[in-house]
Length: 150
Image (cartoon, rainbow, N blue to C red; front, top):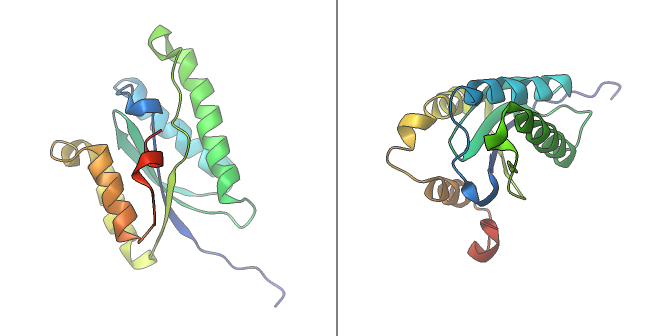
């Protein structure tokens, strides 16, 4: 086969260190655009970026040219440095170690887009921890609760 054809939808989830509620307007939308720009620059076409005060969701296409771990490293390191330039309140901003990355069936992409777009409404009823546990259970990811949150 002479051609490499790839289409991997990924739903990425990661939180602020200790799930500190630090992501608020006006920096929130700007951060989402910045994260989307990093994805696009790495040829991981961004589809939707959203989140809540303590975490981020990204739906993107994983490029055939980059490993998932490298994409996450670039997203977290560059955005962390960037947000620290946005004022004193962000000088101690850090992302928590680790992340969730879940494959998405192309036929379910619209559902994930809507889910990410409605994070503020969603989190009126559910904490990030409950949301994340639900993803881990849905995708049958084995995990040890002691290590998920630190």
